[in-house]
Image (cartoon, rainbow, N blue to C red; front, side):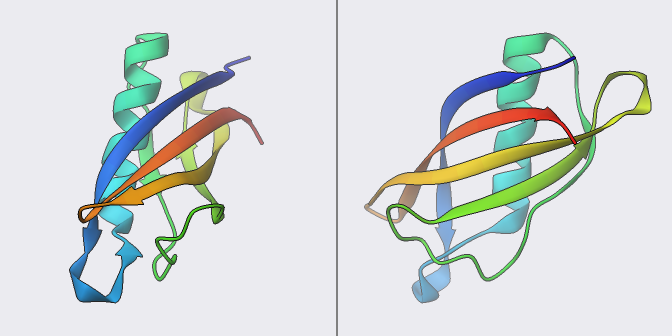
Length: 92
């Protein structure tokens, strides 16, 4: 079982103030790798997520032994074109 929690920061997409799904996926990969020493694969995060404090969304990824995991992400701060997240991840 893989359960992690941590914080990360990603740049926002253009002037629409949405979370860039590719940057969110890279950040989820970084935090999972840093805390577990496992590099997740097939990470997908939704597009069109507003960059507003309190907004929550889920990213999916493949973890150890090919099992499916979810990274639950909550926006905790938005400032100067970047969003800070709190992430909790575990098996689906």
